[in-house]
Length: 179
Image 1 (tube, one colour):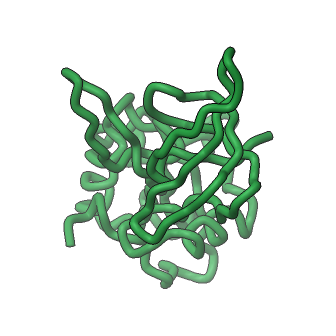
Image 2: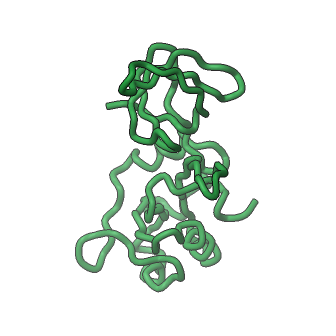
């Protein structure tokens, strides 16, 4: 499995290993993961499906869930972590001053639990009558109410437009939680 699609392993390098946030160069998160893993670091890049519209064609590809960021597992006392800042695709480890700050315990662990083997985070649990936000496509950032779901991954939503509620069928990957 290529490094950019692998989920993190559950082992730690040592008892003192923690997760740290890495700022990657824009659009280079997967490349940074590949470079870090070549150096022996354990990484986690949470992903989500993203719909791209180009030349009247819609395609779905995996994109970083947190654009520009990824996680790396380190034991600062035992590993040569400073090399991360010089890694291709990496801007820097995040933290005040020279030392990176660990991510609070449980945050990355919860993300890895919610992700599949490719690092893709599961979307929200959907049900009829639920209010949702459309996150991609022509109706991005609009609120809608789920009318019906099917097993093929399509959802029929009622979208509030000037003339009233209009039914629209879209993919589950285009929906997010509403505020």
